[in-house]
Length: 106
Image (tube, rainbow, N blue to C red; front, side):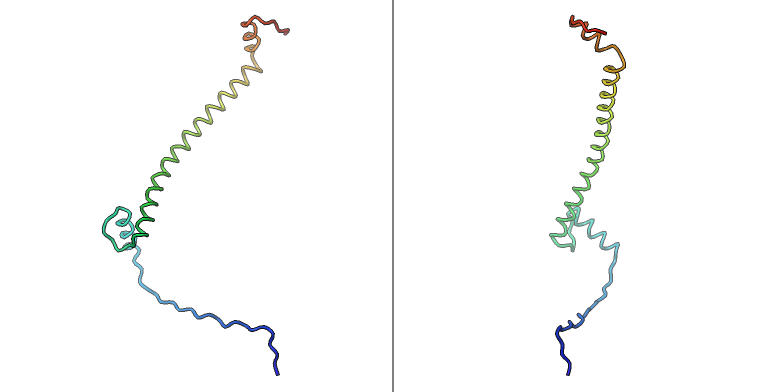
């Protein structure tokens, strides 16, 4: 007599039904749906494609934004380095103080 404490599950069945996939036709349908033409793609899918196309346009704007940000960071860095140079390596501060009439020991 066999005593079983745990019941082992039976393997699940897998049914695979192959179908023909035409990559070019699928791409054409997606392009049609993105442009709003009559197509076999569902309404939900066409909205998703239109949103993806609009977000893709926004990515180009972000790349331009990255360039402008890097230019502004370079400018800010140059201003900071120039300020540090004027303060520590020239007598600009002493001349500025003398301009206001204050005496500072050198």
